[in-house]
Image 1: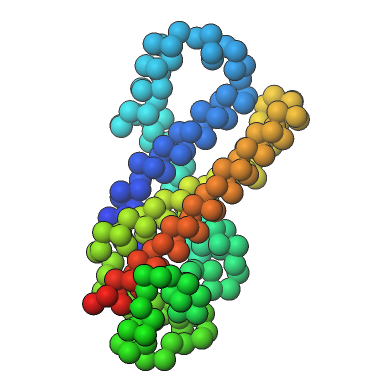
Image 2 (image 1 turned 60 degrees about the horizontal axis):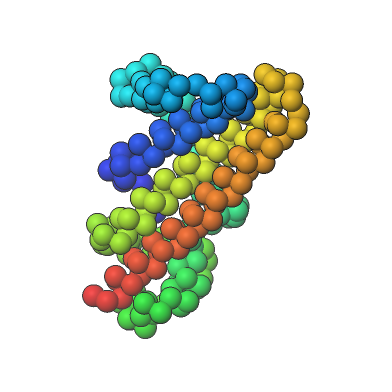
Length: 216
């Protein structure tokens, strides 16, 4: 799977929104929620708008933080975090042995005629899949699934990293172990949802690529 620059740019606002959500959740956990609820809604809305407005120092810090968090984890490790596979984590490694044959929209005989005998090794399958993908990466269905996969993968990666650090910081800031454990559990649930979403989108991308290639 290639990471196109345009897809990263399109997903930038989703990453920032996720970071803002994490910041607000941490503030909620480490302060008194009743005070936030009792605050004037108009004032609170203005503060949030100013906080997330383009060009503000707060948003700039969030952008930098997201870049640093993702910079710590190479793409292959992000794929491993999402697919829970150490070797050949990308679904392209199973494109011709499992994903393609399981899809009713993919004509495996047509693909075999066009590309010869399918390899069995995961890395070879992924290499062949990538060659096919390059010819169909601009298809609407492929672009949509790929972009959504990258967004879910990166948000899940950030959440996984924060789930290791933020609960401890919340405990240090509040001294409330129970609240910090609940907060950590919520972060893990969000990470789990990102894993499910990333897997589904990546499978859909592989299916869309193979379906497009077998219909030519």
